Amino acid sequence: MAKACARHILVKTKEEAESLKKQLASGKDFGMLAKKHSICNSAKKGGDLGEFGPGKMVKAFDNVVFKKPVLKVHGPVKTKFGYHLIETIYRS
Image 1 (tube, rainbow, N blue to C red):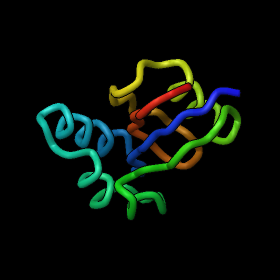
Image 2: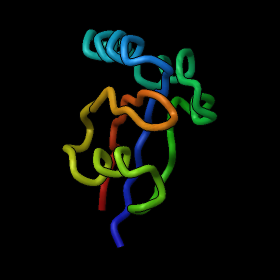
Image 3: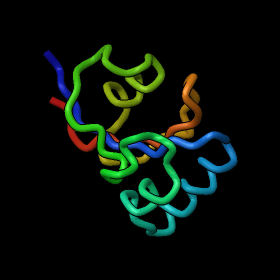
Image 4: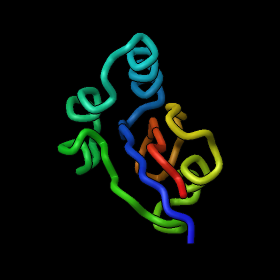
């Protein structure tokens, strides 16, 4: 069974997600931005969602975590919760 560990930043608007992605690209710390801007409970942990298997997250989120390259920030990814910037830490 595949497992992955990921972290994310969840915001309400695509514009906010794109602005944060630019800040990440310019060297800002993912964890710090997650703590400051994310509306998910995981914000307290710098956006860390821990380890999980396929099907535990919504489909659009799963598709990024289990199919896109690791250690790269993907998004904005729209779900019913808002817009995510997602970084998969590892996948096994």
